[in-house]
Amino acid sequence: MQNPTAPMSDPTAPDDMLSAETQQRLSNWNHVRLEPGAPTADWEQGLADELSMRRLEGRFVESQRQGIISRAEAAPQDVEGFVAWFEALKATGPGQNDPLFPWLAQSAPLEDMRWFLQQEVAGEAGFDDLVALTQVKMPVQAKLELARNYWDEMGRGAAPGMHGPMLDELAGALNLNPIIADTVPASLALGNLLVAFATNRRYAYHAIGALGVVELTAPWRADLVAKGLKRLGVGKERKYFALHATLDITHSEAWNAEVLTPLVQERPHCARFIAEGALMRLEAGRRCFEAYRQQLWSREIVAA
Image 1 (cartoon, rainbow, N blue to C red):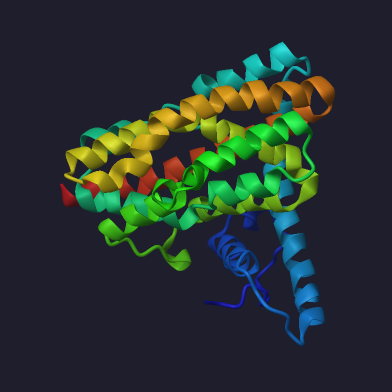
Image 2: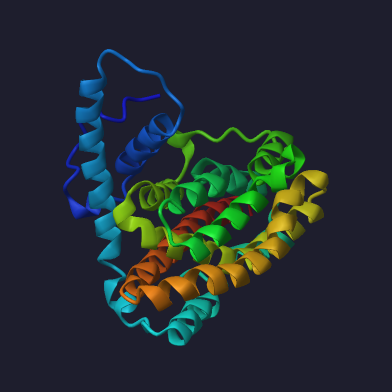
């Protein structure tokens, strides 16, 4: 693995924030910093390196905020209006109803499905860990719903029902080998954005919006991916997507009622930041889908 704190070209240039170099650097750093570690003699140098990376991470997040601020400011701050605005993102948000997913369900050959899933696995930030990090110091009602969501992610205490290992099982069955250097920058950027939200308390409400909009918009995509896997002869290993095609509907309803509603009711100022997080996550997804289509459909044209 490359040293994520090594010098790079110009980490302050706005156009550089979505480059492969920046996103690979952030992904390598996230991979290292989220793993359990041990005390080292050079911990002070480690803090200096971390400060450099946190500045880069902050510049990346703020560069993405700039593109959605005006839309987020239009979100209502009253509870009913905000929840209605949020739920409407399922139909009107960036990247929704992307043609990539019907194609995966109906037409994609196995190798293209494998390539798509490898990108998704490489950019996966771990929903369970993101929820666990986000719930810190949240108000009681929101914290309880985040805990219930986390418990579902953890298979309600049974290892076979844990969602993360289900995805690992699918990756193993399809012989996927996700490598940061081989992953499109848009996929890395999506994962890096979610990690940044969850690990920085100044973006705690952004994390609420981003994770909530995942629950809101994932079922349609998960259902089509599951249908594509079934069409291609993938058996029980497709259960990760089949499960999320239905479970996330319930999760979304509970998230809107038990997390968004009390937060906006008690803290109206946070509505804007929840909206920003939702829009930033959807924009990151939109960029992924476009990058995937560009890669996959150009391969189809060449093959034809």
